[in-house]
Length: 426
Image (cartoon, rainbow, N blue to C red; front, side):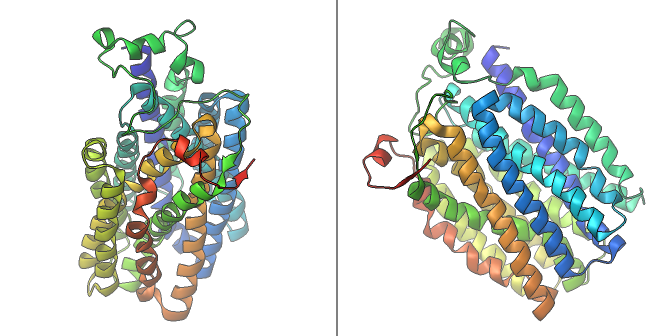
């Protein structure tokens, strides 16, 4: 395999570790809730803590990537996430749970930001869409994690002990591949030091696209040097972050509250809760697998708008579902409808400021945690006041933002952002 192909493999592994670990933990939320007898308000505090500290982790990762590179940052954050994901299930009290989940949340945020930095840099080196494939790997691993959780719950494996194999797999995979990640812009643009640029420019020897420069379908910049000081245009980033926020708001609702909704609101058995998440992720995966081809053919704007419209319909089905099986179908469709938003949001963010791609990605990634925090608070409040059956009314209202703002994902030359009179942030 060429150096660039090895880097692509390493990014796939990173996304897989993150998806497997996160899904294995989040699908146990209902079990942790039952163990500690947590109310909906308590669940909000748990999710809010994870989200708030995760946002800090994302910002820290952005600064670390500039100083030590996104490859090293990603490896460190992945190791931390694998180790700390085990602890929350062993928490004996609510206070201990908050402390342990907060530590995991920090590393979760760091991984989210740094793995997408690596993904966008690798995509740009290839000169064609790759990000949907990376996120498809995340979804595949998340499905595996949810299926694993369903099996261990059914087999009555002690809560917490079932997370240890997940941590060991993550640590081993990280150790085996972290040296294969792209170390920085020199690996994309300087053939004299790594040979990767020559791999990209010589299609006869590598089979990879012959252009490293940003294409009309990818619009992603490689990792930038630490000397870049150009300020980020905040308004374009904000306009990408808003529909991204909507996606993560809905994803939080489906991931963290979907199981609780079907168990407490629609009377499903406890083992159904992780199965709901598995179905959600499985269809999300099925859409992401051909996602790069869809984006190349139809463009990101059209793909995002179509998915957004389908998502609104899926949430309407969930809200009116008379039985948990109907809601399960809605959750599955919902997963597919949201599949393309995260990878395209990072592509759009990196394209806005190519010379500050790492910082731009870290900033837009904050929409992830803002969405999760908002969903945790609002859905918890709705559940407390109106009951679990009303949990997904607000996600339905938020979902309309995605098709309405889909044009923010359209790729255009980065120079056009510089000609607009937008204030900037340092």
